[in-house]
Image (tube, rainbow over all chains, first blue to last red; front, side, top):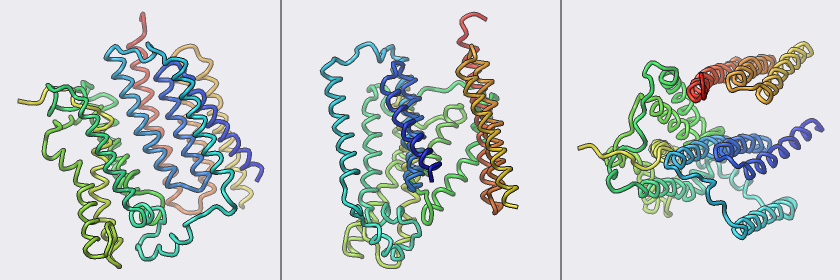
Length: 315
Length: 97
């Protein structure tokens, strides 16, 4: 009992210390490394709070994908000669940011500390109706059945983010390949790693996807692993990214949201509400949605990390 | 029986944690990138290996135990490759040599 308390206390202190260090870090790469470490510690905190689903997502998205994105942004800024520390924000801006962040912290603390005992919860209701969804993992039931609209919006937001990134491309590169051509030794260690790891990663991704119906896991975590394997093969120079105006690329990006919306609209006709599933078919329909959604998320995350097109379109 | 198992776990995990501590000290104290890498890879490979070895005694079923060993093997692989890549970058960027 005291030992677990000591562990939790050390974890909480380490989290605050890493957050403070990341904020104070002068070097951008150091700050990015700090934020990745923060994400991993945060994942441990979620495990301690008995929320392994959130922990997996935090480790995959919060730490992995976001870390990759920030490193790519940092490298890009450095390459373009923009020194990120050149113009430090003024005192007013910094004070305002500090006050706003402080208010958010105080507000969150107040919500946690002042909530009535026991805290209001929908958990018993969610557990009671779990058999109707055919799923064994209540978190997946919330994401794909009770609150499927939120998941749909998340997938669409990711797609919009990619559109935003692409819109930063200079006109002459529109329709070209994203990222730089990689010149890695085809027999080097990185290429070896990029040949060895993806088969294992894809099996892990399928496992995460499949186990999501009964245990922690699901399409976001699975898609992150697939996206990471794709990026690894690309960084090692084994595959090149397709030009962004290829119909196949566009199709892969939108197939998930489109299937999601079509099944949602079918629910309006067959089950009486948008995204409602006809009784008895919930699990099958969720699976039919999740497979293309996983592919679309994987493609979107991978392309988000690589950034806007930077090469002339072919032809 | 469980006394022996717990003893083995505590022993192996403690030695593993010691390797992590030693690797951390090396990372903080060693003078240049290559020797710091050397210190870290010891911690990753041997420390994690010993911790996984210790945890195996707490596992009654085969499959979760294999998963633990798999985690260690993947960490070994990734650690070795990343150490190579960092070392290569360090040598390339070395000012004179």
